[in-house]
Length: 366
Ligand code: AMP
Image 1 (tube, rainbow, N blue to C red):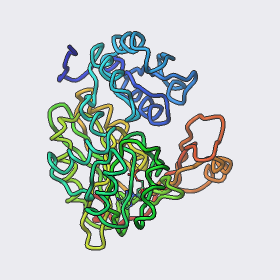
Image 2 (spheres, helix red, strand yellow; image 1 turned 90 degrees about the vertical axis):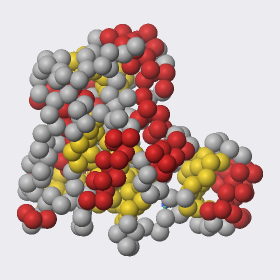
Image 3 (tube, rainbow, N blue to C red; image 1 turned 90 degrees about the horizontal axis):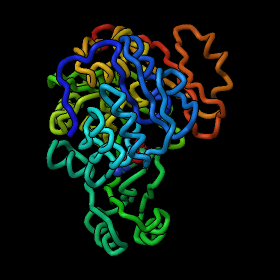
Image 4 (cartoon, protein in one colour; image 1 turned 30 degrees about the vertical axis):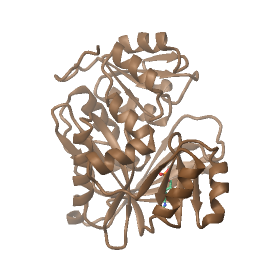
């Protein structure tokens, strides 16, 4: 059985991170500011996160002996991507304390489990949905949900991959085939006004902190900009975040994505049990950023104050966008964050720029 730890972890302790990408890198940087060491577990040598970490284990996630040894060398273990295999998470939880816990991972990995939890347990609004295991389920479900609707794979969908929008009966066979005839979810198509998100954290004493609402714009299904604070009030989104975090008995930072309707109503699209791309702007908002907030939350530290001192717009640098790094490096009121990746492949997140934007003081922390 895993130990539990509710008193603050001493500075100098070691935090294990499953995953070696940019989120792990920025978590490592934040952890080191508080005097912690990080140990990265990643199948690839020289990952962006390992470049900044005190210790590195290079092994597959399926190598459970290595996962256990890694976990035993850490005082707490977290993860930077939600597709950590269940058996890997369990092995880590045996060797150390895993935060957020396995329940959050299991919920976020499976769109049916996620939507069912959001609707029935957290009691927040979600798109109408139906579970699809066969083409017959799909034929039945389109009659319940109506057109347009969206077929998504239950697992491993990201950045719009593993999705098909159905506009009529003629699309059924193609949608089912394109997604690989695998367990899926059919959702009603939401005619939203905009996409927004919230970044919230829960500490081990149940303390909850949320930044204000963020407006997100995507390009080619990949996040392009996040602007904070978004126009409008954050109260409803923060309340939904509170229900979700509490019901999962969650420790750490979570990203929650919403569709916002013309009326202002919010519909939860998905949850990410980790620091989130739409929260990178927090690094330059004059407050504790999401990475430090996560480290504080999983180590039992006080969450601290996360009041913004100014607005920020984050722009992702995708693929060859990185070639303009020197222009960004010269821009006033801009902060460049690069991830140490060598090859700028199409669609690969290479870095981001945070630009300070003027927002009247009274509008910053609504
Ligand atoms: P997801 O992988 O669920 O985050 O979906 C990726 C993107 O597809 C979202 O950011 C939306 O722009 C779009 N999308 C997903 N689900 C729906 C839906 N039910 N209705 C309308 N658009 C959707």
